[in-house]
Length: 350
Ligand SMILES: Nc1ncnc2c1ncn2[C@@H]1O[C@H](COP(=O)(O)OP(=O)(O)O)[C@@H](O)[C@H]1O
Ligand SMILES: [Mg+2]
Image 1: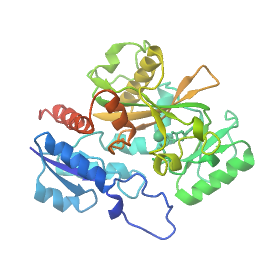
Image 2: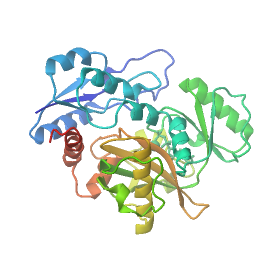
Image 3: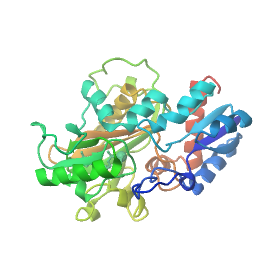
Image 4: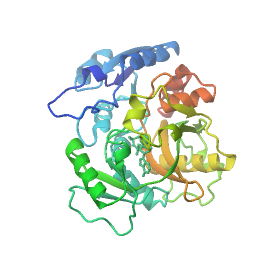
């Protein structure tokens, strides 16, 4: 069977004047691409890397893959992660992971939060800003957190994202609007621990409008393989970064202490897994995801959902879900093949 690995290499990304210095923090290195190709080949598949830009209309027609392993973030546009899957749908070629609607949705944090709110899933209260002169909603109280709506890898996230008064709020909103040229998300700041939950699989029950009340019910997690949650120990950086900033995620990634499994009791892990399954379900995600949480130090460590990452990073030894899988005895190769085979099974090809 022939698998095309579709991704966007950092070195192939376009450059333009005035673009933010962290513009391509999400894209992949050649090392990651090589590791993914070898992982797929070691499962007995043929595999080639194809750059996930408009050239795939030609390269896919000539390579003729049976399935694509898609991790494209793409370059521009408010639904950029959905662009390559949209082309694949047109070409009627199967691909791993979530589809067009979910990828477009998950890239937009406020849109995702509206859905989480509707399902009564806990996510910090929020407001969006299209310009820096809009009044603050009454239900939001300082400290607040300011970030771009449609970026990842901590882009636009630094100690300055935490704001304590209107002056800091409006300065940071203005700065973020100008730098990232997109709607700005302002959330209640959740002081506490940083935990992320990764998993592979698909729910075996049909999607319901509401989730069962009983959140310990194994029913709604059936079909998902959860890895042990990971905590990023931010204590050494509370003075400098406060949160899991772009600086920590990129420049200091190798220095950080990742606690995996995170020191959490079984009940908390169960609840986080239930919430993660619920987010996966209500956003219509497929095959793999990682959900980011903050646990509120001021409210009995109540978990808040920050976002769903339906295309979690897959860099060897660095990406969160890779570390989580390793803690569960699954190598990088094992993780990649599990994602591929989960998709093949979903398409009835395995
Ligand atoms: N409301 C919030 N309260 C506290 N910290 C936050 C909040 N939102 C984001 N953060 C911090 O910023 C980091 C990045 O935010 P996140 O929404 O996960 O975006 P990204 O797509 O960049 O990962 C989080 O891991 C967390 O440390
Ligand atoms: Mg995140």
